[in-house]
Image (cartoon, rainbow, N blue to C red):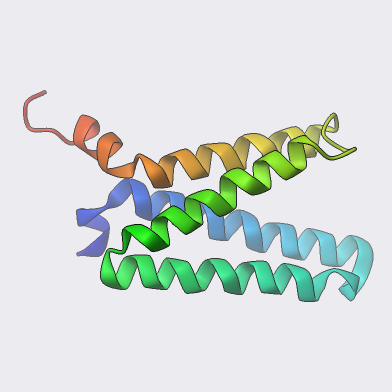
Length: 116
């Protein structure tokens, strides 16, 4: 039922969680558990706001999630690694997910409007 109400938002959240888990696994396999607490903290932070946003349809929670992604994108953009391919992918990913979260109602209205 929830997916039918907000499909673009649900897709953005699924993509976000999938990439976050993929990053946790790949970084863990490369550097061990050194960065694991920080990455788990980021995942828990997102999960808290995702649950809040989906359970109450909170615009505040969605705004925080969107800001998290946009700020993270800017941080990566201004990092020393911003020229590497993975960094470019992560910058684009964070900006795209942030925009999908922020404009999900507009996108859904355009895609699923009965006036097409």
